[in-house]
Image 1 (cartoon, rainbow, N blue to C red):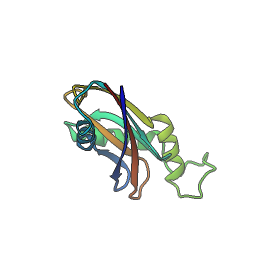
Image 2: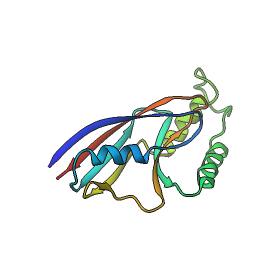
Image 3: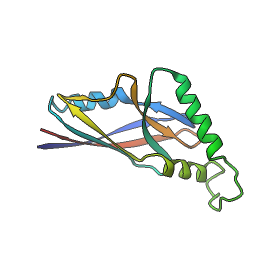
Image 4: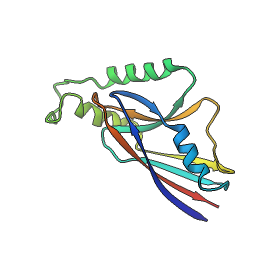
Length: 139
């Protein structure tokens, strides 16, 4: 068994989902054609990771609309407001979603489904550069 570590940065432009599947695929291919397991971990508390449909952009819009309604800004229950009205909702959204993903690798390829893509789910309004750590265990 071998292991490889790396990282990818994703530039966001505010709230929304940002696909970076191709960058991950390129990184995995650069480490051979074995079988294994890839773990991705986002190093932030106001953004998350998700595997989601990448064929119909309405899915992405609907997810953002749903989370905006589920976790609204300016809710009077929030105490943590020093970083702006979108910060505490971003932490709640991150807690409800995922900070890491595990994806099987077969013959050097991610085993994603036909319509699946890997996304950073940005929960803040302003642009950020998000860092994702990658760890590949491969034979």
